[in-house]
Image 1 (cartoon, rainbow, N blue to C red):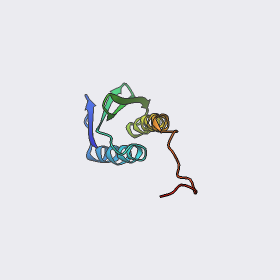
Image 2 (image 1 turned 30 degrees about the horizontal axis):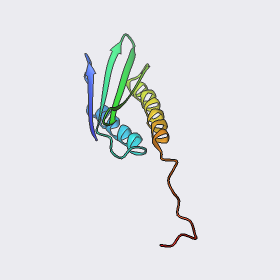
Image 3 (image 1 turned 135 degrees about the vertical axis):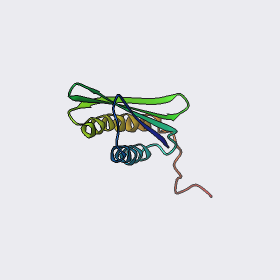
Length: 108
């Protein structure tokens, strides 16, 4: 998965980029193997940091979560929780409940 991390009027360090890449890829790949790309944008408004995470999972499937916090890592963690919940619910919704389970009496 390709992860783009950027800041609006804000310089991001290498440690934040590594933190975002590690945690975002772990959270999304837990539920979706085939995620295409993710975009994380940080911006500062006074003393608050805003984080917007967008993940493109497939054709026409994009999920977005936004959060704010006093610290930049805290804002990302809150947005990541929201995004993980969306991905988990989407995975559950797309599950095929009509799969035929093999019976003990079926001939192979």
